[in-house]
Length: 281
Image 1 (cartoon, rainbow, N blue to C red):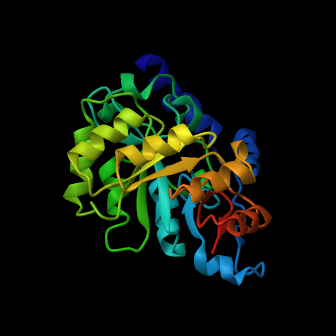
Image 2: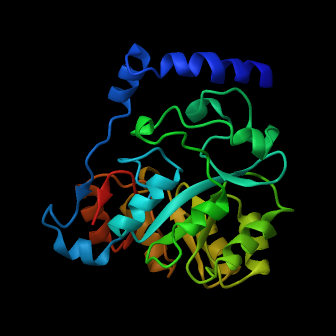
């Protein structure tokens, strides 16, 4: 596998990324930047003041998802928070990637969990918005991600994508090392992971990722602690289930809300936190 990836890196990647390469020209069309829609400029001034917007995987309108430039843009634009996804390498380093494999963004074969960190850092992004503008862009570590938010008003939001439980303390340690116990948000579909993190440090805000809002997930969030939220799938819910969380006193942030009309509808239902790929204040 490593030999094959070496061939790709040394021969195929330079060939496909030449300025005159038709492959690169096509990719520049596919991964061109796109404008964000401002809620305030659309006339919803009340929403721009009251809606707390999370940049899903960073500002992917400007840079590849889960990369430092995407999060630097989120801080620059003043998002409420910016979400990332983390996986463990084979030598137990937390790195940012939505997918567990390397082919989608890096043009390499293999799984992150089967690749050591030193090898991983020899690869760079070959896909994603404006990827060609960021020379030798690497997959960042959790610590590098957190560094972007030090001293800013934007909150780092960390989704744990691996089933590992034994090393969750290292995520908490990374947050505490940056003094972000009261600002970082850790999210997961795995309630047991959130329970472990809550026991390690109850100050860290937790969001329980769910599809549809039900009384079972509401009760599970309540049982875990006062600073445990729900983070439901916007497309899997309706007015009734959205109100269910509100009526039962559980905070919720919905993903992924990408139009001003949907944001307005959510606001009218009482929602004040959304996650998006395409909106900004």
